[in-house]
Image (cartoon, rainbow, N blue to C red; front, side, top):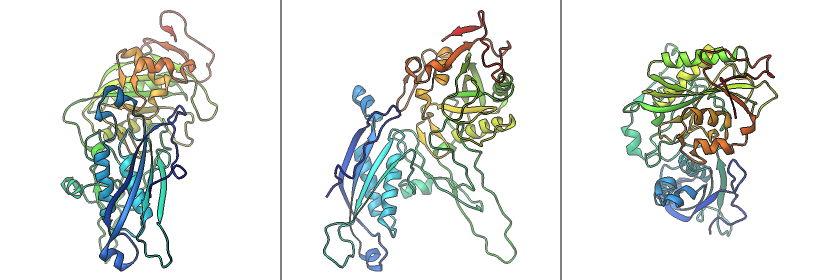
Length: 419
Protein backbone atom coordinates (compact mmCIF):
# COMPACT_ATOMS: atom_id res chain seq x y z
CA UNK A 1 0.00 0.00 0.00
CA UNK A 2 1.31 3.46 -0.87
CA UNK A 3 0.28 7.02 -0.15
CA UNK A 4 -2.73 7.74 -2.32
CA UNK A 5 -3.88 11.02 -3.87
CA UNK A 6 -6.36 11.66 -1.05
CA UNK A 7 -3.69 11.62 1.68
CA UNK A 8 -1.08 13.53 -0.31
CA UNK A 9 -1.26 17.33 -0.29
CA UNK A 10 -0.13 19.72 -2.97
CA UNK A 11 2.43 22.28 -1.81
CA UNK A 12 2.74 25.78 -3.26
CA UNK A 13 5.73 28.06 -3.72
CA UNK A 14 5.76 31.66 -2.50
CA UNK A 15 3.95 32.79 -5.67
CA UNK A 16 1.10 30.35 -5.14
CA UNK A 17 2.20 27.92 -7.85
CA UNK A 18 2.17 24.18 -7.27
CA UNK A 19 5.61 22.71 -6.63
CA UNK A 20 6.96 19.65 -8.39
CA UNK A 21 7.11 16.29 -6.64
CA UNK A 22 9.53 13.41 -6.21
CA UNK A 23 7.83 10.29 -4.82
CA UNK A 24 9.46 7.34 -3.10
CA UNK A 25 7.05 4.50 -2.35
CA UNK A 26 7.42 1.28 -0.42
CA UNK A 27 10.79 1.84 1.26
CA UNK A 28 11.02 -1.19 3.53
CA UNK A 29 13.23 -2.08 6.47
CA UNK A 30 13.27 -4.23 9.60
CA UNK A 31 12.77 -2.00 12.63
CA UNK A 32 12.36 -2.40 16.39
CA UNK A 33 9.83 0.33 17.14
CA UNK A 34 6.90 -0.24 19.48
CA UNK A 35 5.74 -0.14 23.06
CA UNK A 36 5.83 -3.90 23.63
CA UNK A 37 8.87 -5.90 24.68
CA UNK A 38 8.51 -8.43 21.85
CA UNK A 39 8.47 -5.59 19.29
CA UNK A 40 11.76 -4.28 20.61
CA UNK A 41 13.20 -7.81 20.80
CA UNK A 42 12.03 -9.44 17.55
CA UNK A 43 11.48 -6.47 15.29
CA UNK A 44 9.02 -6.22 12.39
CA UNK A 45 8.67 -4.78 8.89
CA UNK A 46 8.10 -1.05 8.49
CA UNK A 47 7.31 0.67 5.21
CA UNK A 48 7.59 4.36 4.32
CA UNK A 49 6.19 6.43 1.44
CA UNK A 50 7.68 9.88 0.90
CA UNK A 51 6.55 12.70 -1.38
CA UNK A 52 9.03 15.57 -1.67
CA UNK A 53 7.84 18.97 -2.89
CA UNK A 54 10.41 21.16 -4.64
CA UNK A 55 11.14 23.06 -7.86
CA UNK A 56 12.94 20.78 -10.31
CA UNK A 57 13.25 23.26 -13.19
CA UNK A 58 16.80 24.39 -12.49
CA UNK A 59 18.04 20.80 -12.25
CA UNK A 60 16.30 19.91 -15.51
CA UNK A 61 17.56 22.99 -17.34
CA UNK A 62 21.15 22.28 -16.33
CA UNK A 63 20.80 18.50 -16.26
CA UNK A 64 22.63 18.65 -12.94
CA UNK A 65 21.92 16.51 -9.87
CA UNK A 66 23.35 19.24 -7.62
CA UNK A 67 20.16 21.27 -8.10
CA UNK A 68 17.69 18.57 -7.12
CA UNK A 69 17.25 15.82 -4.55
CA UNK A 70 19.36 12.68 -4.73
CA UNK A 71 16.53 10.23 -4.15
CA UNK A 72 18.92 7.28 -3.95
CA UNK A 73 20.62 8.81 -0.93
CA UNK A 74 17.26 9.83 0.52
CA UNK A 75 15.95 6.25 0.23
CA UNK A 76 18.96 5.02 2.18
CA UNK A 77 18.40 7.65 4.87
CA UNK A 78 14.71 6.77 5.19
CA UNK A 79 15.57 3.08 5.49
CA UNK A 80 18.16 3.98 8.14
CA UNK A 81 15.49 5.77 10.16
CA UNK A 82 13.13 2.77 9.87
CA UNK A 83 15.83 0.38 11.06
CA UNK A 84 17.54 2.81 13.41
CA UNK A 85 17.16 3.84 17.03
CA UNK A 86 13.97 2.23 18.42
CA UNK A 87 11.12 4.48 19.54
CA UNK A 88 7.68 3.74 20.94
CA UNK A 89 5.60 5.48 18.27
CA UNK A 90 5.60 5.40 14.48
CA UNK A 91 4.52 9.04 14.77
CA UNK A 92 8.07 9.71 15.95
CA UNK A 93 9.49 7.70 13.04
CA UNK A 94 7.43 9.79 10.60
CA UNK A 95 8.68 13.04 12.15
CA UNK A 96 12.30 11.87 11.90
CA UNK A 97 11.88 11.07 8.22
CA UNK A 98 10.24 14.45 7.57
CA UNK A 99 13.09 16.25 9.35
CA UNK A 100 15.65 14.32 7.29
CA UNK A 101 13.94 15.34 4.03
CA UNK A 102 13.51 19.00 5.02
CA UNK A 103 17.19 19.13 5.98
CA UNK A 104 17.79 19.66 2.26
CA UNK A 105 17.56 23.38 1.59
CA UNK A 106 15.87 22.91 -1.80
CA UNK A 107 12.92 20.98 -0.33
CA UNK A 108 9.92 23.12 0.59
CA UNK A 109 7.53 20.49 1.94
CA UNK A 110 7.24 16.75 2.45
CA UNK A 111 4.52 14.14 2.93
CA UNK A 112 5.47 11.05 4.90
CA UNK A 113 3.42 7.90 5.49
CA UNK A 114 4.82 5.20 7.79
CA UNK A 115 3.17 1.78 7.58
CA UNK A 116 3.19 -0.85 10.32
CA UNK A 117 1.50 -3.84 8.63
CA UNK A 118 2.47 -6.26 11.43
CA UNK A 119 1.21 -4.11 14.29
CA UNK A 120 0.08 -6.12 17.36
CA UNK A 121 -3.66 -5.67 16.85
CA UNK A 122 -6.00 -8.44 18.00
CA UNK A 123 -8.57 -8.10 15.19
CA UNK A 124 -8.14 -8.64 11.43
CA UNK A 125 -6.73 -5.54 9.69
CA UNK A 126 -4.86 -4.60 6.57
CA UNK A 127 -2.41 -1.93 7.69
CA UNK A 128 -1.68 0.83 10.18
CA UNK A 129 -0.48 4.12 8.68
CA UNK A 130 0.60 7.42 10.19
CA UNK A 131 0.69 10.16 7.53
CA UNK A 132 2.01 13.69 8.10
CA UNK A 133 2.68 16.85 6.05
CA UNK A 134 5.53 19.13 7.10
CA UNK A 135 6.92 22.32 5.56
CA UNK A 136 8.85 25.47 6.47
CA UNK A 137 5.91 26.84 8.47
CA UNK A 138 5.19 23.59 10.32
CA UNK A 139 8.55 22.06 11.11
CA UNK A 140 8.98 18.43 12.16
CA UNK A 141 8.94 17.60 15.87
CA UNK A 142 12.17 15.62 15.57
CA UNK A 143 15.75 15.83 14.38
CA UNK A 144 17.06 14.63 11.00
CA UNK A 145 18.83 11.31 10.63
CA UNK A 146 22.53 11.65 11.49
CA UNK A 147 24.95 8.78 10.82
CA UNK A 148 26.48 7.75 14.14
CA UNK A 149 30.01 7.95 12.78
CA UNK A 150 29.47 11.60 11.81
CA UNK A 151 28.13 12.54 15.23
CA UNK A 152 31.02 10.86 17.05
CA UNK A 153 33.52 12.71 14.88
CA UNK A 154 32.15 16.15 15.78
CA UNK A 155 33.53 18.27 18.67
CA UNK A 156 31.36 18.34 21.76
CA UNK A 157 31.31 20.77 24.67
CA UNK A 158 29.49 20.03 27.89
CA UNK A 159 27.59 22.83 29.64
CA UNK A 160 24.76 22.31 32.08
CA UNK A 161 21.66 23.57 30.21
CA UNK A 162 18.56 24.84 31.99
CA UNK A 163 16.30 23.86 29.11
CA UNK A 164 16.87 22.58 25.60
CA UNK A 165 15.15 22.56 22.24
CA UNK A 166 16.36 20.78 19.12
CA UNK A 167 16.08 21.73 15.47
CA UNK A 168 17.31 20.42 12.09
CA UNK A 169 20.24 21.88 10.19
CA UNK A 170 21.32 21.64 6.54
CA UNK A 171 24.75 22.42 5.14
CA UNK A 172 25.36 22.90 1.43
CA UNK A 173 23.99 20.20 -0.91
CA UNK A 174 26.10 17.09 -0.85
CA UNK A 175 27.56 17.75 2.57
CA UNK A 176 26.40 15.55 5.46
CA UNK A 177 23.96 16.82 8.04
CA UNK A 178 26.38 16.80 10.92
CA UNK A 179 24.21 17.27 13.98
CA UNK A 180 21.70 19.44 15.76
CA UNK A 181 22.29 21.96 18.51
CA UNK A 182 20.80 22.13 21.97
CA UNK A 183 20.01 25.65 23.18
CA UNK A 184 18.78 27.13 26.42
CA UNK A 185 15.55 29.12 26.10
CA UNK A 186 16.19 29.83 22.41
CA UNK A 187 13.74 32.28 20.83
CA UNK A 188 12.90 31.36 17.24
CA UNK A 189 11.34 33.82 14.72
CA UNK A 190 8.27 33.04 12.68
CA UNK A 191 9.45 30.71 9.87
CA UNK A 192 10.73 32.73 6.92
CA UNK A 193 10.27 36.11 8.67
CA UNK A 194 12.56 38.79 7.23
CA UNK A 195 13.44 40.07 10.66
CA UNK A 196 17.06 39.27 11.33
CA UNK A 197 16.61 36.20 13.54
CA UNK A 198 15.99 35.83 17.28
CA UNK A 199 18.06 37.12 20.11
CA UNK A 200 21.31 35.21 20.31
CA UNK A 201 20.73 31.72 21.76
CA UNK A 202 22.76 30.96 24.84
CA UNK A 203 23.26 28.27 27.41
CA UNK A 204 22.71 29.46 30.96
CA UNK A 205 24.69 27.68 33.65
CA UNK A 206 23.17 27.27 37.07
CA UNK A 207 25.06 26.36 40.26
CA UNK A 208 24.53 22.80 41.43
CA UNK A 209 23.28 22.67 45.03
CA UNK A 210 25.53 20.84 47.47
CA UNK A 211 24.80 17.15 47.70
CA UNK A 212 23.05 16.93 44.31
CA UNK A 213 24.45 15.01 41.39
CA UNK A 214 25.74 16.97 38.42
CA UNK A 215 23.63 16.32 35.31
CA UNK A 216 25.73 16.83 32.20
CA UNK A 217 24.12 17.93 28.92
CA UNK A 218 25.72 18.05 25.49
CA UNK A 219 25.94 20.95 23.04
CA UNK A 220 26.81 19.52 19.64
CA UNK A 221 27.98 22.07 17.11
CA UNK A 222 26.63 21.97 13.56
CA UNK A 223 27.82 23.20 10.17
CA UNK A 224 26.67 26.77 10.81
CA UNK A 225 29.00 27.02 13.81
CA UNK A 226 32.11 26.08 11.83
CA UNK A 227 34.49 28.82 10.74
CA UNK A 228 35.25 28.85 7.00
CA UNK A 229 38.67 27.93 5.66
CA UNK A 230 39.04 31.46 4.23
CA UNK A 231 37.09 34.71 3.78
CA UNK A 232 33.54 34.21 2.52
CA UNK A 233 31.53 36.73 0.48
CA UNK A 234 28.35 37.77 2.29
CA UNK A 235 25.44 40.08 1.53
CA UNK A 236 23.71 41.90 4.38
CA UNK A 237 20.42 43.82 4.13
CA UNK A 238 19.93 46.82 6.42
CA UNK A 239 16.66 48.59 7.17
CA UNK A 240 15.21 51.10 9.62
CA UNK A 241 12.05 53.21 10.01
CA UNK A 242 12.15 54.44 13.61
CA UNK A 243 14.14 57.41 14.87
CA UNK A 244 16.95 59.00 12.81
CA UNK A 245 16.98 56.11 10.33
CA UNK A 246 19.71 57.41 8.02
CA UNK A 247 22.07 58.11 10.94
CA UNK A 248 21.34 54.65 12.35
CA UNK A 249 22.15 52.94 9.07
CA UNK A 250 25.36 54.96 8.71
CA UNK A 251 26.42 53.92 12.20
CA UNK A 252 25.48 50.30 11.51
CA UNK A 253 27.78 50.24 8.46
CA UNK A 254 30.57 51.63 10.64
CA UNK A 255 29.82 49.06 13.36
CA UNK A 256 30.00 46.24 10.81
CA UNK A 257 33.33 47.50 9.48
CA UNK A 258 34.74 47.62 13.03
CA UNK A 259 33.62 44.09 13.88
CA UNK A 260 36.54 41.63 13.95
CA UNK A 261 36.13 39.09 11.17
CA UNK A 262 34.03 41.37 8.92
CA UNK A 263 35.45 43.42 6.05
CA UNK A 264 32.97 45.79 4.38
CA UNK A 265 33.67 45.87 0.62
CA UNK A 266 30.90 48.09 -0.71
CA UNK A 267 27.64 49.76 0.30
CA UNK A 268 24.64 50.25 -1.99
CA UNK A 269 22.58 53.33 -2.62
CA UNK A 270 19.92 54.02 -0.02
CA UNK A 271 16.38 53.00 -0.93
CA UNK A 272 13.23 54.49 0.49
CA UNK A 273 10.56 51.80 0.48
CA UNK A 274 7.04 51.09 1.60
CA UNK A 275 6.68 48.62 4.45
CA UNK A 276 5.95 45.06 3.31
CA UNK A 277 3.68 43.00 5.56
CA UNK A 278 2.97 43.69 9.21
CA UNK A 279 1.01 46.63 10.63
CA UNK A 280 0.61 50.02 9.00
CA UNK A 281 3.85 51.96 9.52
CA UNK A 282 6.23 54.56 8.10
CA UNK A 283 8.42 54.06 5.06
CA UNK A 284 11.76 52.34 5.50
CA UNK A 285 15.26 53.28 4.52
CA UNK A 286 17.09 50.22 3.17
CA UNK A 287 20.61 49.47 2.00
CA UNK A 288 22.71 46.45 1.13
CA UNK A 289 26.26 45.85 2.36
CA UNK A 290 28.68 43.60 0.51
CA UNK A 291 31.30 42.16 2.84
CA UNK A 292 33.76 39.37 3.44
CA UNK A 293 33.86 37.45 6.68
CA UNK A 294 35.92 34.84 8.44
CA UNK A 295 33.13 34.31 10.99
CA UNK A 296 30.99 31.19 10.99
CA UNK A 297 27.42 31.81 9.77
CA UNK A 298 25.93 31.70 13.25
CA UNK A 299 28.75 33.87 14.66
CA UNK A 300 27.97 36.41 11.94
CA UNK A 301 24.30 36.25 12.96
CA UNK A 302 25.21 36.99 16.57
CA UNK A 303 27.43 39.89 15.50
CA UNK A 304 24.63 41.49 13.48
CA UNK A 305 22.16 40.95 16.31
CA UNK A 306 24.55 42.64 18.74
CA UNK A 307 24.66 45.69 16.46
CA UNK A 308 20.84 45.68 16.25
CA UNK A 309 20.56 45.58 20.02
CA UNK A 310 23.11 48.37 20.40
CA UNK A 311 20.75 50.55 18.37
CA UNK A 312 17.69 49.70 20.46
CA UNK A 313 16.19 46.91 18.38
CA UNK A 314 13.18 45.33 20.08
CA UNK A 315 11.12 42.39 18.85
CA UNK A 316 7.56 42.94 19.99
CA UNK A 317 5.68 42.40 16.74
CA UNK A 318 6.34 40.37 13.61
CA UNK A 319 7.35 42.69 10.74
CA UNK A 320 6.70 45.66 13.01
CA UNK A 321 8.55 49.00 13.00
CA UNK A 322 12.20 48.83 14.01
CA UNK A 323 15.15 51.05 14.77
CA UNK A 324 17.48 48.70 12.90
CA UNK A 325 17.21 45.41 11.05
CA UNK A 326 20.25 43.52 9.70
CA UNK A 327 19.56 40.33 7.75
CA UNK A 328 22.05 37.87 6.31
CA UNK A 329 20.86 37.51 2.73
CA UNK A 330 23.74 35.38 1.47
CA UNK A 331 26.70 33.56 3.00
CA UNK A 332 28.88 32.29 0.17
CA UNK A 333 27.29 29.27 -1.46
CA UNK A 334 25.85 27.85 1.78
CA UNK A 335 22.30 26.51 1.64
CA UNK A 336 20.98 25.95 5.15
CA UNK A 337 17.71 25.71 7.03
CA UNK A 338 17.54 25.97 10.83
CA UNK A 339 15.10 27.57 13.25
CA UNK A 340 17.42 30.55 13.79
CA UNK A 341 19.05 30.98 10.39
CA UNK A 342 18.12 30.15 6.79
CA UNK A 343 20.56 30.72 3.95
CA UNK A 344 20.05 32.31 1.51
CA UNK A 345 17.28 34.34 3.13
CA UNK A 346 14.03 32.59 2.15
CA UNK A 347 12.30 35.76 0.91
CA UNK A 348 15.21 37.65 -0.62
CA UNK A 349 14.20 36.61 -4.13
CA UNK A 350 10.92 38.50 -3.89
CA UNK A 351 11.93 41.61 -1.92
CA UNK A 352 12.67 44.61 -4.15
CA UNK A 353 13.88 46.63 -1.18
CA UNK A 354 16.80 44.17 -1.02
CA UNK A 355 17.16 43.30 -4.71
CA UNK A 356 17.20 46.83 -6.16
CA UNK A 357 19.95 48.20 -3.90
CA UNK A 358 21.89 44.97 -4.35
CA UNK A 359 21.62 45.14 -8.15
CA UNK A 360 22.73 48.77 -8.04
CA UNK A 361 25.97 47.98 -6.23
CA UNK A 362 26.60 44.56 -7.85
CA UNK A 363 24.88 44.43 -11.28
CA UNK A 364 26.04 40.89 -12.08
CA UNK A 365 25.02 39.38 -8.75
CA UNK A 366 23.21 36.05 -8.70
CA UNK A 367 21.05 34.79 -5.83
CA UNK A 368 21.43 31.01 -5.36
CA UNK A 369 18.84 28.64 -3.98
CA UNK A 370 15.16 28.08 -4.64
CA UNK A 371 13.61 31.00 -6.53
CA UNK A 372 17.01 32.56 -7.13
CA UNK A 373 18.59 33.91 -10.30
CA UNK A 374 20.12 37.15 -11.58
CA UNK A 375 19.45 39.78 -8.95
CA UNK A 376 18.65 42.50 -11.50
CA UNK A 377 16.01 40.33 -13.17
CA UNK A 378 14.51 39.35 -9.83
CA UNK A 379 14.35 43.03 -8.81
CA UNK A 380 12.47 43.90 -12.00
CA UNK A 381 9.70 41.38 -11.24
CA UNK A 382 9.56 41.48 -7.42
CA UNK A 383 6.00 41.89 -6.09
CA UNK A 384 6.93 45.00 -4.07
CA UNK A 385 8.97 46.73 -6.82
CA UNK A 386 6.50 49.65 -7.00
CA UNK A 387 7.09 50.30 -3.30
CA UNK A 388 10.71 51.36 -3.86
CA UNK A 389 10.36 55.15 -4.06
CA UNK A 390 13.94 56.13 -4.95
CA UNK A 391 17.60 55.28 -4.54
CA UNK A 392 19.78 57.97 -2.99
CA UNK A 393 23.50 57.94 -3.78
CA UNK A 394 26.26 59.19 -1.47
CA UNK A 395 23.95 58.81 1.50
CA UNK A 396 26.84 57.95 3.81
CA UNK A 397 28.07 61.53 3.53
CA UNK A 398 24.97 63.50 2.46
CA UNK A 399 21.87 64.06 4.56
CA UNK A 400 18.52 63.09 3.06
CA UNK A 401 14.98 63.47 4.47
CA UNK A 402 14.40 61.10 7.35
CA UNK A 403 11.68 58.48 7.28
CA UNK A 404 10.03 59.51 10.52
CA UNK A 405 8.00 62.69 10.16
CA UNK A 406 8.99 63.42 6.55
CA UNK A 407 7.32 60.64 4.62
CA UNK A 408 6.30 62.88 1.74
CA UNK A 409 9.68 64.44 0.97
CA UNK A 410 11.73 63.15 -1.94
CA UNK A 411 15.24 64.43 -2.65
CA UNK A 412 15.96 66.10 -5.98
CA UNK A 413 19.11 66.56 -7.97
CA UNK A 414 21.95 64.18 -8.89
CA UNK A 415 21.78 62.29 -5.62
CA UNK A 416 18.40 60.75 -6.45
CA UNK A 417 17.62 58.02 -8.96
CA UNK A 418 14.06 57.23 -9.99
CA UNK A 419 13.28 53.53 -9.86
